[in-house]
Image (cartoon, rainbow, N blue to C red; front, side, top):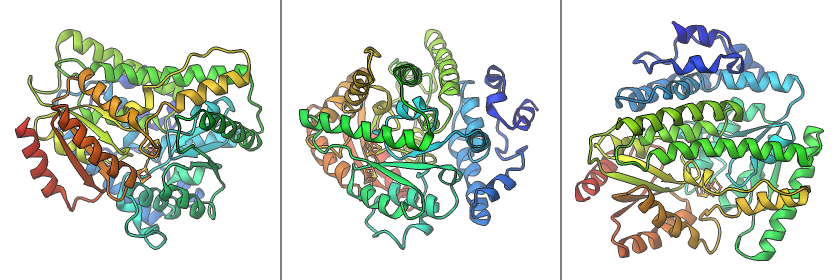
Length: 457
Ligand code: BJ8
C-alpha cells in the first residue's frame, strides 16, 4: 500500500525519502500501481509497441534474478528496487520537468566524461542505456557483427526510439576511448547533437595531461554554450563536493564487502552502482548513505547474505549496464558471492579522488583531469595500473578467485585478459576468463565453466 501511495506522487524529488527505506522487498509484481506514463513516452517520440515489449520483459528478469533468487537482502535495497521498477517513468518525468524549467540533459557513455563539470553548469548528467540485446534490432544494419554488445545495445537504444533518456538528451558527450565508440558517435550525430571529448591514448605522459586539460576546457565552452551558464570557482567547487560525496557513499558500501561475512550480495551492490549513473546525485548521496549505514550495522551484528565460507569472487573487466546482471546471477546462484567489481560500474567509479583546493578554475580543472587520468581503462596504453588495482583488490576484498569478464569483440579488454590471466596465475590467484555477450545462448556453457571454477577454489 505504501508503495502505491509513493508511486502516485509522481515525482521522486517530492518523496519523503526516509519513508522509502521502510519499504520491504516484496515478492510482488514490479509493474503494478504505475502512473500512466504513456502521454510522456509518446511526447518523447518513443516507439510505444517496442518499448512495451521491453518494459514487459524487465520486471520478469528482475524478479527472477533479484527477488526469487535472493534472501535476507538489506532493507535499503527497497529504494533501488523502486527505481528499477519504474526505470523509464519517474526519473524521466523529473528530466521533463527540469527541461521545462530550462535545464539541459547531457548524456554520456563513459566514466571519462566529468559529471562534476556538467552538474556545475546546472545541467543533468545521465549515463545512457546499453545492457541488453533487445535493442540490437535498430543497430545491427549499421554495425559489423563483430562489434561489442555494449555499443550495439547503446546505439540500438538511441536509434530504436525505445530509450526515453536518449530522447530527453540535449547533448551526448562521447569520447575517443575505443574504436567502436568513435565510429558510433558519427552514426549518433546524425540523430542527436554529439560532442566528442578527445581522451588521450597514453595517459601517463605529461603532454597527455596538458592535452586532456585543454580538452576539458573545450568541453566546458561547449557545455556553457548549451546550458547558457558560466562555470565559476564557486559552482565547480560545489559540484565537486557533491560528486565526491556521492562516490564516497558508494565506497562505503564497497568497504562493507571487504568483511568476512558480506552484508550485501554482488548483485545488489552492482545495482547500486548502476543506478548511480542516472539518478539524481543528491538523492543518491542520501539513499546510498542510508544503505551504507545499514550495511555497517549488519557488519557489526554479523549479518551476512551468504553461508560462512562462501567463495569470494572479484569480477574485473568491461562495464555492466542495466540490466546486465548475467555473470553475477550465474556466480551467486552457486553459493559464491561477488565481493567487488573492478569495472566502470564498480571500483573504477569511486576509487580515484581529488582534494578540492585551489582558488582558480585552472587549478580545479587540473585536479579533475588528474583524478580522471587515474582511471585504468584498457583503452589506454600502457595500462599497468589495472593489474596493480586487481592485485590490490584481491587482498583488500579477501578474494578467492578472479573472473576476467570481457564483452565479446571488445579488443582492449580481451587482449588485456590474456596477459592478466597469466599474471594472476603467476601470483597464485585462481582465475577464469569469460568472454560473452548479452544473450543467454551460452548460459549452459558458462554455468558449467563457473561451477567447475568454483569447485576448484
Ligand atoms: S573508461 S571501460 S566506460 S571506455 S566494452 S565500448 S571499451 S569495445 S565501455 Fe568503457 Fe570508458 Fe573505458 Fe570505462 Fe569499447 Fe570495450 Fe565495448 Fe567498452
